[in-house]
Length: 325
Ligand SMILES: C[S@@+](CC[C@H](N)C(=O)[O-])C[C@H]1O[C@@H](n2cnc3c(N)ncnc32)[C@H](O)[C@@H]1O
Image (cartoon, rainbow, N blue to C red; front, top):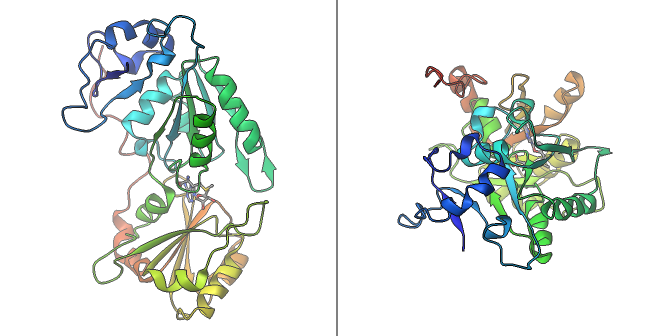
């Protein structure tokens, strides 16, 4: 038996946006009697709270276990956090977060929640992937609402699928909450639509992170070069000389436009524009560093016209409504 808390909040019985998970659990007996608001439309419109995490609903004698939410935090601008992600961040008992989750989003975490930095940046590993999985299993036996907060989208180069599989194998209830991925948002904030009529009708998302770590994906750059008009590379700065060389050898013209967008959607967003022929030299001269999204293709040229209307960080998420008393 599962209860669905309706969106938008609050309801008289369960004002979830202001609740911690403890009070949320205490309210679940009444919440469980609410009509599931999503089922009529076929959409899951609320934050599901598993009966397993509710001591009032749990079968007598069963092992108490919470639920893990694999939540996408988006690329940085807190205005790009989904409503569902924000609700979970505000009511979680524990938040285990990655290095790319931005400070304004961490500031939304319930002050009483435990925060654990599991961040990984090149060459620095706070926690190994095995440690993170163990931690999630452990916390799911301690708390009702465990949020695993990841930059962008958990299933886009975020190892979300692996974590979900491990949790499911261990019998832990788990759910993914998709986020806005950097490969779409960072170009958008730089004035680059990744598809555009007359420029590009297809996109490939690919990892450029081929040289570090035990897991080395074999990217077929020859195929990638001809598969779509826009190529969006994650984690590609370090390996950019090999990537550009491979794309040129595959037959892409030397003057193919390339954009690098670092810390996209954040106040410190920075861009570097060039071509397949000169972008590596531009990176060397400027000292441009990761984390950055690389966009290869004619759509980069649209930036000249569209960048002037790019979103301003933070401007879209602060409410202009007077605060409710
Ligand atoms: C491990 S991947 C995680 C991707 C993430 N799951 C997503 O959907 O955006 C990390 C890479 O994503 C890219 N990235 C994440 N956030 C970014 C941002 N705000 N600006 C530019 N690139 C970003 C960079 O290429 C970075 O090296």
